[in-house]
Amino acid sequence: MRRPARARAHDDTAPRRGLTVRARVLAAVLGLAAAGMTVAGGTAYLLQRDRVDELVDETLAQEVAELRTLAAEGVDPSTGAPFTEVSRLLYVAIQRAVPSRDEGLVAVVDGEVAWVSSASVPVRPERLPALVASAVAAQDDASVRLRTLGTATTSYRYATAPVRVAGDPAEGVLLIAVDRGAQHAELTRTYRTYALVALGSLVVLAVVGWVVAGRLLAPIRALRDTAQRISDTDLSGRIPVTGDDDLSDLARTANAMLDRLELAFTSQRRLLDDAGHELRTPLTIVRGHLEVMDPADPGEVAETRTLVLDEVDRMHLLVDDLVTLATADRPDFVQLAPVDVGRLTDDLLDKARGLGRLEWRVDARADVVALVDERRLTQAVLQLAANATKFAPAGSTARLATRVVAGGAGAAGPRRDTLRVTVADEGPGVPEADRERVFERFARGVAGRGVEGSGLGLPIVAAIAAAHGGTVAVGPTRPGAEPPGATFVLDLPLRPGPTTTDEEDR
Image 1 (cartoon, rainbow, N blue to C red):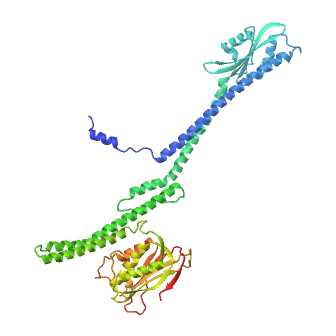
Image 2: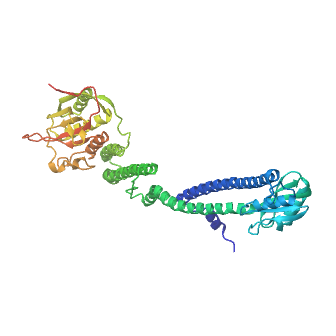
Image 3: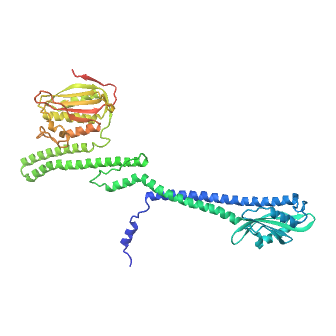
């Protein structure tokens, strides 16, 4: 029965799990090691085999040279005179020869085998008709010949040396044969041992490589496991980092990326939650008034229109504040640049006076150039000024001050100087219990209940301070004063500037 086409297409596109990175790395290492061992061993074997053949030829040449010396200079041991017979010369040559384990000799005189090596010699050339025939044929050859003879079981390297003695018409030949196959077999046994050792080395390399590759790739597996655990509701998973290599740096980079993602998602969720929470009330008000409005009553239509526009303006301001807080965690939220703090203080005073209701004055002016974001810092100080305008009695005095506070020395070494911006009013102040929570989103202190506002002003000030690497806090009240007033202190790290002097406003 044929399978449906849809099922076949699904099978063709289904992902197939291949070898892991660990297995592929190990396979590559073992492949390279095996190839290197094979090439090295094979090359060494071929070179050593050629060397064995060279040694065999040298042995044969030495035997022939000894025969030539004996024929030219030697004497018959039985007479003490030079040799007079070829047969006697060949006999003495074989008797004096000390053949190796894989060497054998045979003497041929007038086409017949005359003398052979002793019975203890394992190589018996006389038993091979082809070698004997080659020796008989060499009687008519005046020169020494080196030849190779292959058999069904081995191969022989042999030399034939014709011999003649003056006064003796007989023709003789000494054949020296070396079992070349036996010489190569010994070399093969040596390299068989090498192959076994190489195989064992590969096994050890595989075990060690598997362990080492596992440890090296542990951060990648941790990255995979962490990525599998992470969901849109839980971004808290992180990769444990213990080493100091490239993969550990990768894990740290991934953790930093997860930090940024978690911060971005958290900020996004907070923005959505805050927007949904705060926009629900004005939308309900607008909807309620539109539902009960009488379209035929011009006065009610105008009244409803005024209310709806007011609520829309309030929603517009609320959205602007939410967008500001949503972007506070971005790296480009503040753009640091050299700013003359003394000039900025005067500009802030002029802008604060434009808010009305209060008498503004400068208590201190820092004549210093600091690296700050002038636009964001102005936004924060004017937010504090607007806050003072809401709560302080009309006509009361509000104070603005900028100072440089020396950092001094701590346990961790010298601390940086601080640029301190202070905004103080003569309003009801901030109760002790509310001094922390007023910087939370939509939180309102006791004095702020019933006062128009989104509850995002002070959180925006805190976000701007944090983006500069600083803090904002509620400062001390005026001792013995009634009302005690509110003081907000904005501390920003002071980057190096040309001057650090304060000038009191007189």
